[in-house]
Amino acid sequence: MNCKCKALTVAMAMAFSGGVYAQTDYPNRPIRMLVPNAPGSSVDTLSRIIGNKLTEVIGQQVVIDNRAGAGGIIGMEIAKSALPDGYTLISATTAASTVAVLLQKNPSFDPLKDFDYVTQFAVTANILAVHPAQPVKSVRELIDHAKNQQGKLNMASAGSGSQSHLSGAYFLSVANMPSLHVPYKGGGPSVAAVVAGEVHWTITPAPAIMSQVNAGRVRAIGHSLPTRSALMGNIPPIAETLPGFDYSGWQGFFLPKGTPRAIQERLRAAVIKTAHSPDVVKALGAQATEVVTGTPEEFRKVVQASLVNNAKVIKAIGLTAN
Image (spheres, one colour):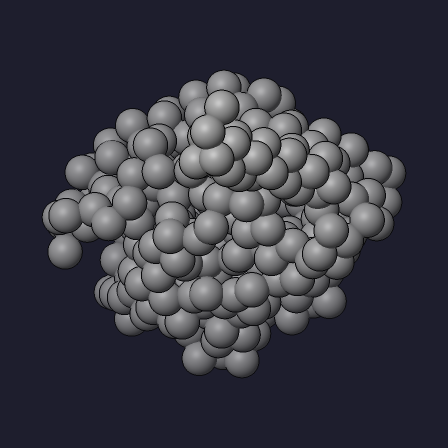
């Protein structure tokens, strides 16, 4: 064997051994959890609950990196371009991963092709809530009151294309109810606006608002699951007033495309263990959120179904791509 061949063989062996070592040694530094939403949003709240426990389970610090804007598009574009080395974990959601794509004329990412799937970890209901000063204590009373006010009631959302925007627009369409949409920059600010009385009502993911509901700062009058749920306490489903109403969200984790399989499996096992730990189940339950995990293939089917269902909702309420 000549010198050039020997050098190439040694280089290949070193690269291979280094790659294997990097995977078997994983993780050996902090992991970034990229959240395409603002601090205080439902996505941020659930991500932090999971991230804090995942730090213990996986043995390295999980650092939250909020990259909000454009309905989640900015964060998802950053995620798509991240190195596939296992040190960027993407908090994927209904709005940022599917709605944002459907509202772009020329989508900048494809949730089915541009990422590797880890697992789903949660299903979240949307909570319909009003400022306590409003003279309504039920879904029917809100609809009647809004009609009597002839469109003077305002609806807060976390921004155009957010889960709260679509669920709110869908609710208005089904209820045939007039209300002005007021978009805010994230779930935290939109809920704060209802608490402050700047706007009259919102329908937003449970983790963004349950603490305010429990504190009595807003009044919850309905939720978006199709039937009653123990996680919701005495809050009734909107479907009891508007039959067939069902619009909830999911959350899970993606990785940049091309992440080594061994690292994907290591993270999947750690996330599933984290999500089903008693303290995380309890913490998510306090946010009216159910733990749901599964295989990457099962998660992919959830995303595919979400694309189909949200396309129908977007068409039904007349939203157009930008």
